[in-house]
Length: 313
Image: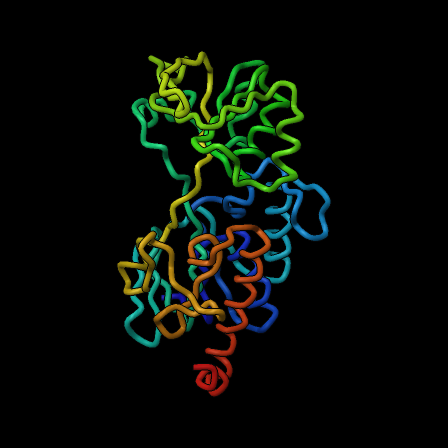
């Protein structure tokens, strides 16, 4: 069995930041990632609010973080899914699709997955016109008609990105105003090929082999209308990847987010959480980075300076 000082589950912004600070503190550190390093940061078409970068694509920023982490000596094992956590004893056990590891401390930075809107046709047409990642699938819709569903930053950024590819972009939001940053909303409304549909709710996605239309409810007048589209990009938030943590006894809130304190500590000693999987109210790359740093430094204190950790209790 491999032994590590610190294991980090998830190689998104939080996990990679934790890895950088952990290795610099002298901890033998392993990051486990079921997909490729970068997390949902890599899915962002454009990031314009991360300090130091006026404008950078999500995938470029994610790659810079991963390269930085690796260059310092952190081992990142991609395509290795975590299957089970045993956190009952002093030495924590992490079982994956490859093997079982033993670690002194654990940081859960498993992020989240895309939330569905739960309408007829969504599951059936996923990957056949229904997408949850603009930057991943946007190039498939060059010159075509697309609908973006949502009202937050991700929905607007996806719409702006698709406006440079698709012939026509519509964005449907079920409320009367967007909850996204004002600067993004202003840019959105200035785009000639983007049509804004507020107070409109998607009720069905239609198509046989591929998406060809959506049924939308106009919540002002109660009318149903059918729009001809080639693709639907769902951008209505995310669900935390916390099931394994919950099964292992880590406390979560009513929405499934891992409950942490200001030091990123969970209810189990030596177990920390950072990033979108936590109950931190702000889900941004910058906050994920800060949480990852805090978690790594607290893990260092727990392992190397237990007297300090006990003082903080």
